Length: 410
Image (tube, rainbow, N blue to C red; front, side):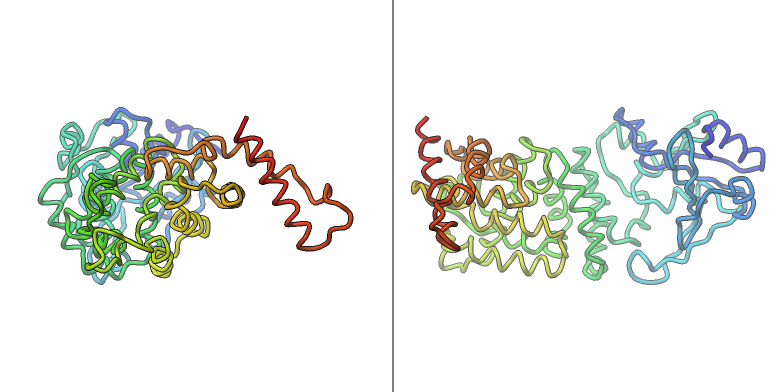
């Protein structure tokens, strides 16, 4: 049964507890953007007392109490204020304490950056900002609350992701803390790194995520396939922007400016990773990098465990990006268009990658989606009755190529 926020707060305050909105909701409110889901923190109450007030709320936290309470029509997380003490490696290496004696001040101190370490006390909405988060938001900077930042190594990626998403800078002290996370980052579960990567790719300029990691001395530890592109020179006539890393950052930002599709952005990020293994004596040329790139992607996937669609989309772009905008033979063009239709990428996503890489698109890609829709209307049901097996497939393809010739001349 849903309760209003007013009822929720009144029940808890009546039991002697304090209630706060914390974290991303407060940060986004102060940034003047659409606020994230509301997350509540309670202090000054025992868990059994809370359960008595909200007996139907399920507990979803494992190592500390987090409950889902239906408030104002939404299922909201309600966490108990807690303090943490580092006892081992990684994000699981904490001794967590929660009790009515743990204060909101202790809870906020354990958090990562100042912008995430603020709270609004309810019902009045008084801001609790102990570490200067409001000022840091106004100054567009990411700043660690304390050296405790280093206790969860993935906070280093989170800081870089925040900087990219919000277009903030990162303070020098925080960059140093990020670097101190390096050793433990190497042992972090791949899903935690992937989570930060996937969110960073939604930024207006995803390149900033990787640049901040590089500034902190972490790019080689987190995304070595991208770090390997640094210093891999390219022919200046085709790539005046610089080495393969600079080109990749430019491409992913161009894709992001054109399309929201994270799949396309990742495919663009990966399109030239084969250049990272180009021998020094071959530079500035990268012969065969579209073949080598498949092997690099396989190695990256073995470590990161990408979703199938991500892996397939990146492999397709790596394989096709060099020739996709330069085809002249009708049969090859037909094969490419049909292959794009079968790939996880949309035509818009594939075209965004090719346009960012090459600067323009040929007509067969500009009109590829509409033209391919015409090609796939051709069916084996229309084939001569005398044909069988492979001959039917050959007939279909020949008809598709002929249809494409007409479309391209129209």
